[in-house]
Length: 66
Image 1: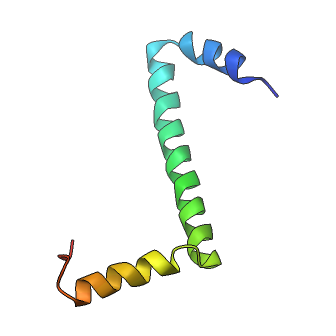
Image 2: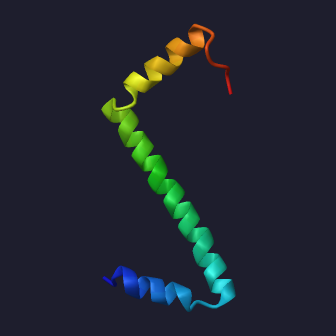
């Protein structure tokens, strides 16, 4: 496995078209990582308290729907 510094150097030297392809892939990769983290947090119950608070605030009329 290559290290972070080597990876940075490799990405820095990519031709423009390959850099764009990598950028698109990496953006999708990071979005998928975020989705997995949120899903794990939901399934573990870590967001239950804040979710209940948001629901209570909405019901009380202190927030607006999106």
